[in-house]
Length: 259
Ligand code: NAP
Image 1 (tube, rainbow, N blue to C red):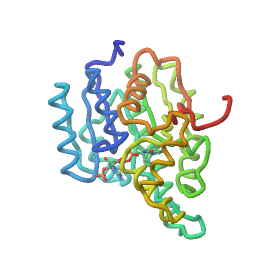
Image 2 (cartoon, rainbow, N blue to C red):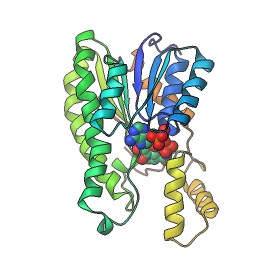
Image 3 (tube, rainbow, N blue to C red):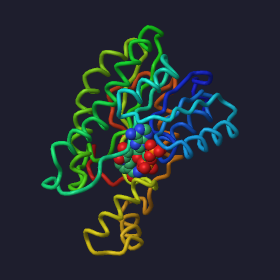
């Protein structure tokens, strides 16, 4: 399917690995020029080169921490007027809420609620003026079905979801859509870290824990970054202009509700 976005420019935050990388690759495969970011230079440069050589689009790599004011300024300096914005950052650590300090909560809210909002604030008005914009926030299935040990994520991402619910209804008349893409278990470093925590907590072996988690998913496996990226690219396409304010859940069917 032609997505109608070749030649557009996207900022993909936190994209040297995992789901952000999956989104950047999928957009580039559809002809979108991408500006990708991460804190680690080596992996980011390798991903940028991989996308460039596979797709031929223009790829700019900005080494920065997207959860800081300075990091976001660097990223926006490299691309002040993106047509597409994918917000993303590392997830907060798992743990018992009794053990988290106020500072831990502030960090989670900063990374997973305020940083996306700041990126949207800096880019949405240009999209509205140009009458095209697609914003996809990578959030989490925990917004739909909370996981106890991911309490920081459950809380911080809930705040972002509430904010988007309001703004997304104000922008669609100008062909600017804002949606959230909610990953369940996807085979990335982040998932492996969470499984290691759970294995330790339950006194199990990590390999055994991983096998159980995959088998317990209705799909019998974890999702892939490629599958995630392909859905994100569709949400950024011209065909998705009538969809806004939605929580698009990709979890292999793990959420048991009818709707
Ligand atoms: P990942 O495989 O660990 O990749 C994270 C990527 O983000 C890396 O490129 C990392 O590079 C970059 N990054 C992290 N913090 C950053 C920061 N402050 N500034 C810029 N770049 C940053 O993680 P993932 O699985 O793709 O997860 C992406 C998001 O989805 C996370 O918020 C995660 O909690 C959420 N999520 C994932 C799953 C899953 O199963 N994978 C499920 C639910 C929710 P550097 O470290 O070099 O910066």
